[in-house]
Length: 74
Image (cartoon, rainbow, N blue to C red; front, side):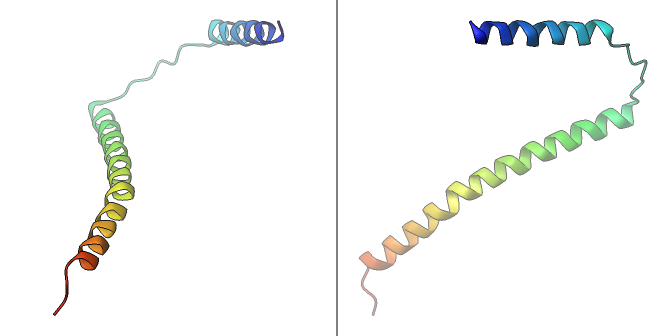
């Protein structure tokens, strides 16, 4: 019952804020849009590379350690 009331208050607040907001008459030129898209792609690439790094390098180190313990050295 309490969760329903909170959800009702939240949704009515969102509807009220959207109804009272004024439109922004803004123009984004082609240079701004291209810069925004480039920044978004760079952010996505950075997140993907970081995720791969956090997964790949520990696995690589583990495989190198396992290889050095299984093969005899001269």
